[in-house]
Amino acid sequence: MGMQSEQVIWATPLTANDTNAKEQLGVKRVEDDVTYGRRVYVYTQNADAAVTISQYDAVALDSGSWMKKVTSDISDTSIALPGGVALNTINPSRYGWILIAGYAHQINEANSGAIDVGDALILTSTDGRVGRVAAGTAPTYLPVAIADVADTNTYTCSGFVVCGNMWG
Image (tube, rainbow, N blue to C red; front, side, top):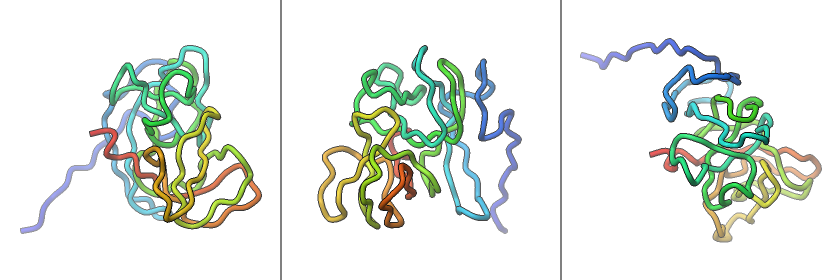
């Protein structure tokens, strides 16, 4: 007999920018996307009361609220705590979904420099942006994602987000 699964009806869309929490903070949501494959999301809160998380920003875990809140303001936390990629704008102190595992078709990049396939994309001192560590070189921090295509002239890149273990 095969295993049955339950279909979950979520209170919020993946583009949520909620004033009040409508899901349990830290809850994981797994979806199979026709275009991008299996992706894992977490419902979280923007820990910053003044800074907006922009769409496709790389975010860090807020060091004062493990597995509950994130920020794109690196001065509030550490680049050593990658949390994922924001799916939509999350205004200060509001709630929304971030991608923690799976393919991200867009991630905001610190420079329009060359990114190569296999590069580790790590948080930088530029809020919400990733930089690269060349493939084959040990990254100094845990990566947000691994680049899947070469990119040479834009301020966005794409890759496979690898922050799932940061969320337990």
